[in-house]
Image (cartoon, rainbow, N blue to C red; front, side):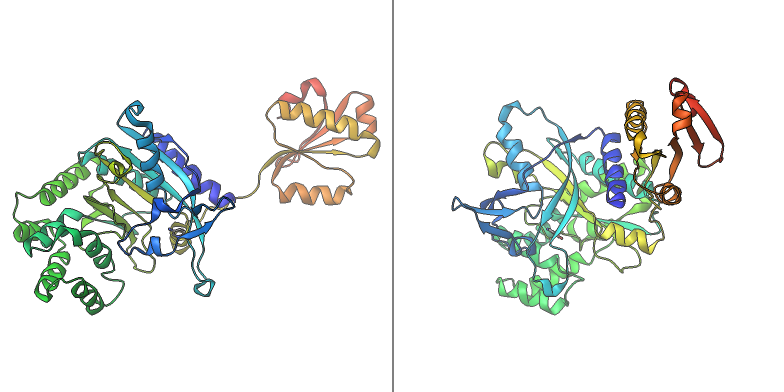
Length: 406
Ligand SMILES: Nc1ccc(Br)nc1
């Protein structure tokens, strides 16, 4: 829990630095919110069930659709752009035989109402800032960046129906995860010709913007967006973190533009985080198209990475004061002192019914700064004994002079 709180505090601090506001959404949602026909893994592992009212419900597998639903529910009262973040638990239903977690926490940052690529540039900057705060460098981690518009241009080049776009995205997202011949088989089963499949795979293997420009020409949105993003990255000072990689499509059906994912350069781990632009998702919940982009950053892979890099912080419990009555008859005064200290903002562990030897061990265990002993002779003089546990200094102190020893 200390590790989680430390990580989440960093998520929150980065969100604050970028002036994002914290929001929250229900963990339990209508199943219909996540039913999509694109064959995504995330929709095939829904933790869904019927509730006592006969409703088809689900423990949310992701945050974005809930965000989209609630932004649109606000209608005209939403003053764009919205810059929202949340840290929320998400679920999936996997066979336990795979030994994988069924829940994790995900930090999401989303910008709603900005159509320009500077929104994605801000989000990628937030991710870089988080990594830097955790001690991770551009030598440890890279961020692959591309755009769904690259794939859209490739499909157009081979006159593949737009209706197949989303399914093709979900399939080609598996590039590098399953053998290419399996990907080719899945694409041809969609009715994509083998030469188109080869052409698509060729475009998706590009890793330089110059080559992309050569393949698609320089007047398309895909090249323009990516050039703008890489130029802004220079301004932010995070160019060394990002690289163009056309194979990045991300496996969520609703992305429409720039997509990105962070990876460990040693290639030992799954993607650390990922996100992109989803300009058509919000209008699915009524109203006009509202441009949006965001990312999800899970709490599992990042911890594995920090372990790999020896960057896990040493988080110990910390208590300011241990208050201990030396005599059971002094439990009342001990409570009075504990209450007075707590009102001064001191964290106090009120310990009773223990031998003094145990108390000293306990002070070490909870990293207490001070031990306050309530003894009858001192108390008769309206005093307590304050033992500073780092200097070993001991003082008998009047209650109204305690502040000087805190
Ligand atoms: N979508 C999702 C939910 C829960 C876990 Br664990 N991983 C991915």
